[in-house]
Length: 228
Image (cartoon, rainbow, N blue to C red; front, top):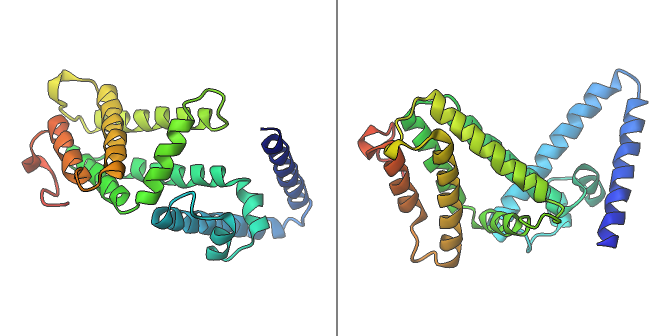
């Protein structure tokens, strides 16, 4: 714990110092440097997402991610600080993409977007396993990522709940949009764990689709009825 604490402070100091130096740069250079920094972060997240999805979180080193993104290990650490932080950024980006897909759509389109997210997850077992492990460990209030995952679930539930309200979805059983959002994430997370453990026994696409039908109505009302 002490070593991690000290490393985090070193990274923080390095980032703060670099930011100070950036602010001292000539005015004309700042937009270009800022744009390059954003581009570099995106490249690192892209590479991490691909490698985590293919090989899993534990099997991939930061040096491999840096090489795949066309940057150096020290640059990667400057932008993200640690492998755990990079994983959180990968997951956050995926969450944002799903939130954008389900925002202000029709009920059928929201259902299709949720199924699209499930299909993507089913093709990237490494990231799914990494997330399941990280989220479970973060339930400990003393875990450094506890607040991150707490906020992640709160924001995700609210985003989906708001979309269900905006789309005026007629949910089964008279449940509220907030309850439906919590149930959808609970079912998806639970199915993912079962699928990771027994992929030959759990058809995550079919089971997710069945649950969505229970909440959203029959498949005939979906905008893409044959999309699997």
